[in-house]
Length: 144
Image (tube, rainbow, N blue to C red; front, side):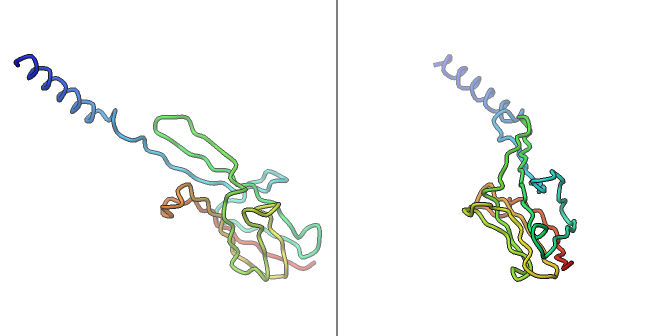
């Protein structure tokens, strides 16, 4: 009986010390997305402004969306999420954006002169929208 008590106490102390050192805790991860012009590779930074023309071929821009996940316990992982990101235009009469499921998701197309705000969103956990990654930028559409 004495051996069982000693074994129980030893296991309890081992479990408590493991919890205190963090070995049983979940790793902390964060993520972010970056939006790029897929042709030139230039980043379209959060809060920036780009310009499109109303005449072809200057009336379109294909976006590329890359998501980087940072972890306390592993190397950063970057993946292309262009096909699964959500794209929102504040005024579709000025700027339309191809969505997931279309042949060219993330393709901006200028429709008329004006200004439209764009929000690109990627949600890693659709059940929790508070952890979605966002990039917002403005598109000025001009007529030559």
